[in-house]
Image (cartoon, rainbow, N blue to C red; front, side, top):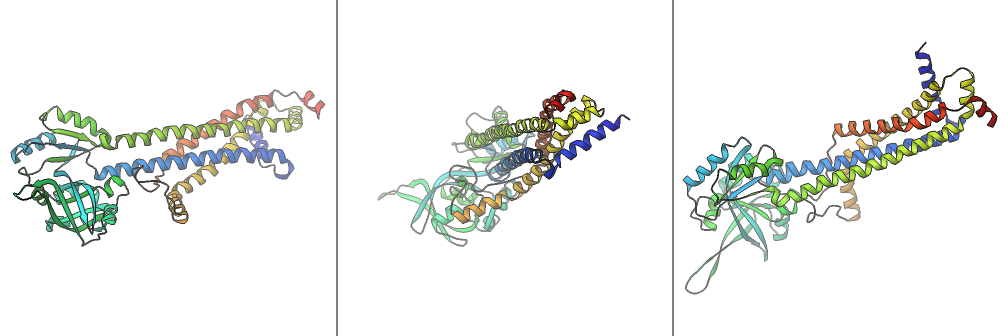
Amino acid sequence: MSNKPLALSRFVAFRYVSAGKRSHLVSFMSAISIFGLALGLAILVIVLSVMNGFDKEMRQSVLGIVPHITLGSEENLNEAQWQEIRATVAKNPAVVSISPVVQAIGVAAAKGSHKGVVINGIDAAIEAESSAINSFMSAGDLGALIDNRWGIVLGQTLANRLGVELGGNVDLFSTSVSINPITPLATFKGFNVVGIYRVGAQELDSNLVMINLSAARALFKLRTPYNAVHIRTVDVLQAEMVRQELMTDLPEALRSESWVATLGAIYENIQFSRGIISFMLWLLIGVAAFNLVVSLIMIVRDKRGDIAILRTLGASPKTISKIFMWQGCFIGLTGIAFGVVLGVLGSLTISQFAAFIEATFSIQILNAEVYPIDFLPSELNLLDVAYVASGVLVLSLLATIYPASRAAAIQPADALRHE
């Protein structure tokens, strides 16, 4: 017997939601409520997916190539001193890899064009294992530096500016100057392009070149085996903390820097934007939930006669209340279903849609000079979908409380008198 009022409440609520032509007001108000909830949920899921995409690209792409921590020295440290430093760093359990590097500023020139660049002289075998650079090679391979001492790997943007392709030649100029009795001469050397990469980050694609470690020593006339080491950590977000820990055991003469110093502000802005935008979209969903309250109140007013008849036939106020709570629940679930479908489809296609808009209208949605990447990424997280859907369902249920209590308070005699 106890299940009969519940079954009756569900049945009547479902009939109200699917009233169709028999009640234009109920159908219209239900459709408006469903549309508002679905739209808000879908937009929130898509925005969260885009923010997840930015986070993933920052971690796996940009921070997969940029060293998490750099230790360098202006002094001419010998091999034994560097080995001692590397041994100290390796003791930290948060350190994944340590790569020797000659790091310097220079100028790349070819075909009458030139550009100031950051030159990294690397051990190609170690770099290929510790860095994600090979995943972004559009031509050639980082491993070619092993066999070609005078090979160079550069970004696609820089290659386009210099007008070179795979197999072309680029001159690298050192900042050191050779002094001879007649005139000072710039130190430079010709390099063969053995690899071109494209990450999508302006900072990398246009400013970073990689050459063989021994070639860098020769170009910059170094007496030390290398002048810096690149360190990668287990958790990129803990890099700054690891750097501080390392410096307590390392010589003060070493200079240190983590990725946070150069890219940390961008990453923090992404996280901050995620929070602000999510809050604003939750407000949008809150407005949709308020619209559901108004819709249910209007439906209650439209159904005063039906409520009076049900009360006359013996329905309790609790049963009447449950009818409209079930109706709000059905509306919320329908809006959630449509919203989840639209949100998932939008998240899976937003990157291609953005690329289509850029190609069709010749515009650039993301400028690589401002953002860390030049395309719109998306990474769908099912936990985000479940979290948003659960939140919308809770708001929908809360929105039914007041209209349901109003319906339960209607007295049959008063309602029939006004009919």
